[in-house]
Image (cartoon, rainbow, N blue to C red):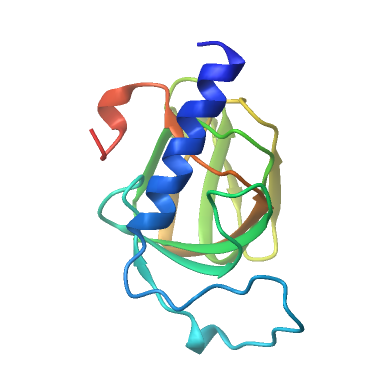
Length: 159
């Protein structure tokens, strides 16, 4: 898949991801200051990740070329199949353990355990995968448009 096709596919995916969040309060859009509490976050399903994953958008519009900050919550044992993103992904683990690795094939033994406070930065188009040990919460930030493309379309819950 060429870069232009990948960008178009992932941009469409970002729009779908943004539209898939239900019951979400309007995320912060850079007007003034925002000080908030984790208890105030509104969680919803993530169409591109399927059952067992939830998202809370703190700031931004994932379909636009702008900064965004989200939190993802994964149930114990949730598997993140090999996939790529169109932009840099910056992750900080807040709770639980995120086992994460670079690669095109899902291999839990190849992952590194990331505990609360640990972080990872992945470059655009580089394949990655992982799984959650215990309920796992992490914060992800980057610049949109955002999206996810699974290396094997059969792993994409939107298909």
